[in-house]
Amino acid sequence: MTGNEAVAEAAMDVGMRFFAGYPITPSTEIAEHLAARLPMVGGVFIQMEDEIAAASSLIGASLTGAKVMTATSGPGFSLKQEAIGYACVAEIPSVFVNVMRGGPSTGLPTLPAQGDMMQARWGTHGDHFIVVLYPSSVQETYLLTIKAFNIAEALRTPVILLLDEIIGHVTEKVRLPFVKDLEIIERKKPDKPPEDYLPYEYTDDLVPPLAPFGTGYRFHVTGLLHQESGFPSNDPAVAQKLLHRLRDKIEVAHRDLIDDWDEEHTEDAEILVYAYGAVARSARSAVKRARSEGRRWGLFRPRTIWPFVGARLGPLAEQVDRIVVAEMNLGQMVGEVERAVAGRCDVQLFSKVGGEPIHPDELYDFIAGGE
Image 1 (cartoon, one colour):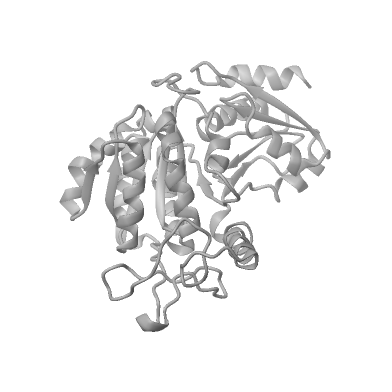
Image 2 (cartoon, rainbow, N blue to C red):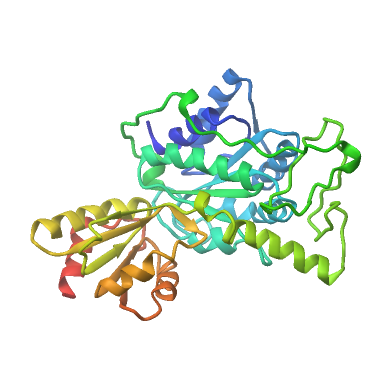
């Protein structure tokens, strides 16, 4: 199957039963696939009038207890940012898929890029905290779609799943697990009667239980900063406490659920390649070639993009002479790598834009030329 088809199938397997979208290259196959398949499993597919409506409808559907998803690309992702911010502060479990293409604006609709890495983190305004995952194969796309829903439900938060056009459209063999064998996390529901329920209660795990609308629990949902009751508040202490909890539940308390990366040949590496998505495939080939020639290169491949998985890079930076960051953009993650490394080794950028993927040989030549 393709990466886009893997997103659709995994979402249904993990229990997604509401999809709202609007066609846009190169994500349209996700919507096309779900338009046919989702009604077969008792779900609802709806094509909205635009991306803003599609993203906003997720919030209402999720509040009824449904697992929800939308998919888009470039310009559509820009339009969804307001709803993403609302979902962050109102703590609405939801999955937003962005199959990246060249930009800015309408850019290069049919060609691959990785230009939305910082938009995924900072696209919506204000101090907000977000989980972003990014696979490098169709098999991983299936598995990380499952993980995206599990994080969204466990932490009561929107999760962004990034693909690039290459991963979205490449066709590969996938081993699908039996659904009964999947680890599926469901959102926490209240164990109190409606009259005692606080939709934004401060709990030990920093994740309040969420009662589905229509089950007798009546509560206020707003994009304004709010009290535990859900009603707005201008009290600075209330705002401070809420924003700290929203940060800590993602950045601190649940990193064991969120953090995900892969390492290859790092045990003795002198040069480390940092790459993600489709570029990591080229990086793996370049490292494999270097290893066959006796060069001690390694690969660090984050599957969790945000929160940034920087803790592991520190020890690796002590070991290697150089980290080469390979990206299909003008350098969006290299600054984060530099910050994590904190001067312990050299950091170089190999970037490429214009719609062509990074070829293993050109990455190899760049790295080998600097030895």
